[in-house]
Length: 107
Image 1 (cartoon, helix red, strand yellow):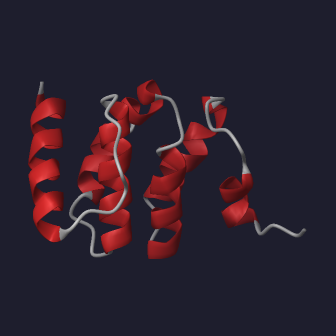
Image 2 (image 1 turned 180 degrees about the vertical axis):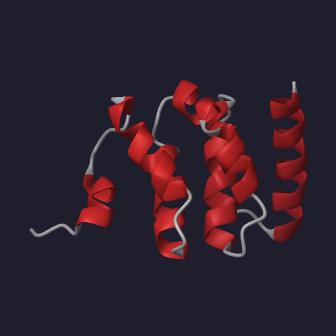
């Protein structure tokens, strides 16, 4: 199977080996919504420590134009706090969870 360079991270089975977190961090700042969406989903599979290290970027993505990017960023941030979380929320649930997450990361 041929894998394109910018999408190779989607096929890795386990992100607990956080050595590729620098690449994911760069992809989180991509101009492409598709790449940002996949990078936020990929970082959600990293260790909570790695997620917390990228919290500033992920918090910035909570206001992204793409619903996928917003929801995956919130999902990753919640996993970074050790919560069990689903990745898609309704608008009202999203705003409620976003407020909780921002309060927890403020500390």
